[in-house]
Image 1 (cartoon, rainbow, N blue to C red):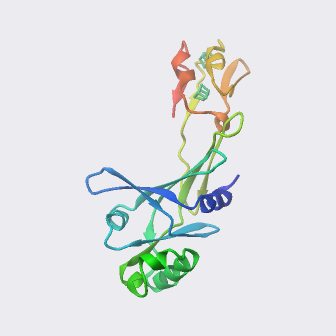
Image 2 (cartoon, rainbow, N blue to C red):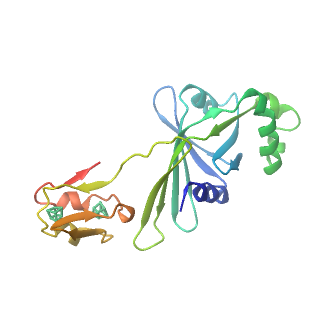
Image 3 (cartoon, protein in one colour):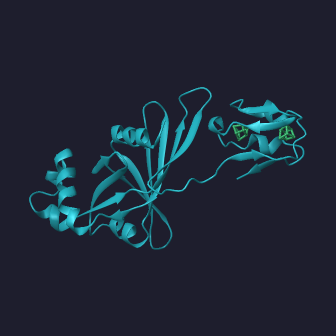
Length: 205
Ligand code: SF4
Ligand code: SF4
């Protein structure tokens, strides 16, 4: 798996959930399908008058979520920015040619007056597959996106008692050199290991 494959999978999903933050700091979420994919970025259309557009222009933070029929969750965290004025019309035409239903929504030149095109080119992508055993997760970046450390780690306090191994639903903890170690790619982030550790050796990142 890699970032480009994740973008391809999101393209197959088609309709994605886009979460933004409004002026009161409240989460807002919409389904968006007017999206064009390049190998390293995502370009999407909305209307200038929509609250969604205002939130993107004011704050810009966005999370995009897709879920495939193979139980794969793909989440992209990024900042969306408008494409340059000189490229707006070109991308509107590309998106409308790929999504013919849009011509019913914004016929003729109404699309140029109403429309604005944003791009996401720097992002962190989380891939989480619940359809395999053990489950599998990995994170990637596109552009200059940052990787955020999440999940659990086991410190030197570990006394190798084995409690966490017995209570891990994905059996993704090994004992090596008298210390427990989590395989992060197979970890659910459920927190069972932290709950049962008698010496506080499990830390949440
Ligand atoms: S968080 Fe859950 S899945 Fe991950 S290592 Fe701990 S017990 Fe296992
Ligand atoms: S429960 Fe705590 S002390 Fe026991 S093996 Fe796991 S991390 Fe180590």
